Amino acid sequence: MADEVTLLNTWPSPFGIRVRIALAEKGIKYEHKEENLQDKSPLLLKMNPVHKKIPVLIHNGKPICESLVIVQYIDEVWKETSPLLPSDPHLRAQGRFWADFLDNKVLDCVRKILLTKDEKEAGKELIECLKLLEGELGEKPYFGGEKFGYVDLSFIPFYSLFYSFETFGNISIESECPKLIAWAKRCLQKESVSESVADPEKVYHFWEQRKKKLGLE
Amino acid sequence: MADEVVLLDFWPSFFGMRARIALAEKGIYYQYRDEDLQDKSPLLLQMNPVNKKIPVLVHNGKPICESLIIVQYIDETWKGKSPLLPSNPLQQAQARFWADYVDKKIFPSLRDTWSTTGEQQEAARKEFIEALKVLEGELGEKPYFGGDSFGFLDVSLVPFYSWFYAVEKCGNFSTEAESPKIIAWAKRCMERESVAKSLPDSEKVYNYVLENKKKMGLE
Image (cartoon, rainbow over the protein chains, first blue to last red):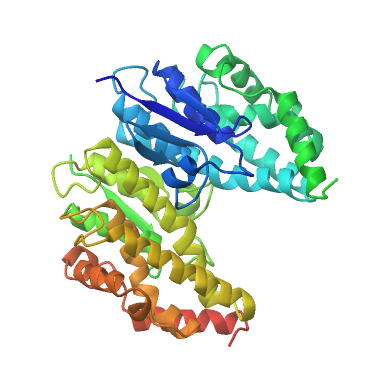
């Protein structure tokens, strides 16, 4: 029986991009449904009644929510192709730690830059976080080592937002964290990534509009 | 070569309790070190330079940080006994989803119920009770969140039970009245040695909370 896979998503969401990259890495065919978050579909409300958020992966009718939970699920179900998490428990723990760092420390800064007036202060805090990530990357081609992996996948969607962070937050990521920019460009050479990430200019205009609506500009 | 396992922890920390329970479930011998969070040890700062927080599991000299990551590490490293995460990927995903829910909804609302006053406390209390009811729905008629066996989500949530008494006194409500099934589940978990040995006494936690409220000028 063929797998039925659907992704409920919105195009600017870095969390949705994580799932798209994972599905592309594994070569999984799926239906992409673009949600309007101002008018959520009955399907989204049924599949994620707790948080009512995207992304939601629906696999043979069963929903999986929260981007990192979805990515780990995809990795475990489609084990044979392009493993994302390493098999060694300690390396897995490290991968999960840095993904958690993205979803806590980095995301706090991102929210402040995009949704508040404290953009410049948050911009400085973001640079601090990015420098820690750059330190973790070190001289490796990817966070996963020789191969693109879980942390790379979790982080690269934020690259679509770098232009927005720089413009709103008055920072230059290229001059502060050149290794991260080199890493991002390396990731973008992968088809699974380049086909999944959002266009930075488009993303910037989206958030510029959103800030205007919220009275933040 | 024998495993060297050290847990850097702080006795009232529900995150630390998760690691203690997991280690006990697997029967792992380890050294427990209680940290003074006002005066963090060089070892803690060396082992968790990014967040500088407990718990940290140090296994043969290598650190693992963040409680849910530690529990999964313990489950994957000591596979033979008491599996905590289910083997089915969908059930694993559900367990992870709900553990994340506990971290996002139970932890902040519980914290704000004891550490704030007025409207903020009222809002936190409502959110805490609401979250417990959602979890009660997820538990359903099962003995444990894991089904018939004690598992990952049970480990993730049960530490908060040691704080219920303190939070009820501060917030002036009864968790038993609001979520009787959660209390029944917690008591069932407390019959397990791994849980009973890992959770501090509720009165001790309440006294700790009162001391903190004094320091914060809240009582």
